[in-house]
Length: 390
Image (cartoon, one colour):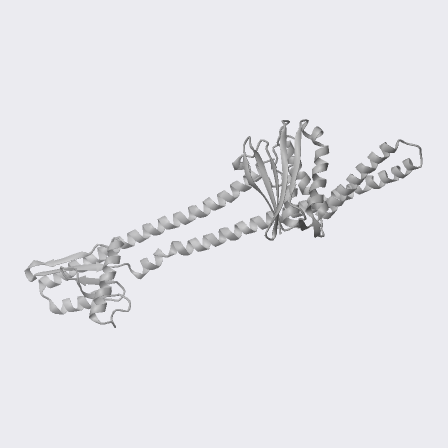
């Protein structure tokens, strides 16, 4: 029964791995392109410097002036520094032409450091006969700068798509669970209604004939139980009404019901206790909330696996919330399985349907707008399940 939910977990994991894989592939490919473009930029700067060196050596002043003008193009960020590293000219840098020389020189030096950190080492221009030695620092072209932000843009897009897909998947899954619960609950209530009506008729006939009063009382009690089960299913399949009620009677009734059935359930001595603060009231549907408690208590008792044990229900108020803990000292739940226990279909029993704790979650979270979760559990030491109601 756990296979479907393992598959669902794997699907979500696969979705995440796929998104990370696409993002990493994009980053890798982008970095590779940036590296190739930077290599091309270095080749281009080297060629320009070599050409400039040739023009200096030829002494062609007109061609040299034209080439220097071309070299100062705004499309290519460039800083020319002297032998000590002080910028003497620059081109292609934003908002520096209108600044004073001292401030512009300082900012140009900042660009030098930034480009060196990017791995763009300067190209040396040295002409000994003219006693010239300059360093040509170059930065990334606008195309490289735009390309570098591409992974971030894709990360936002991919992350958004994954988030939308995940939220859509969760929404569809929850909607399907609700539809299953509503359909199953209404059909169960309908199916129980017919034999209940018939049994009540037989009870009336028994009342007209001499019969053991104890037998009749037992039948009536079981009928009332069946009627309550039918009503529970009917209410869980609709918008159940909530009202402010004392908590203690609901808890005590659920504990008493499970206590009477302990011998049939586990065949061992299991002690059920309650520790409730006085005068706790909470907005609940007593019939459905009692059903949720019965399921938690039944699970706690069965966790003893036929051994002697203890189950305790503790209730208190903390600020605006009411806290109810159901703790046992049974076999406990492995950490890797704690996320699955409240999912429909999850069970460790050979003949279980895996609906008990899922029913608890629907009653507490969907109908009472509360929370139910495992606060602690250790294998061989027991489990504590907490309900929080506002």
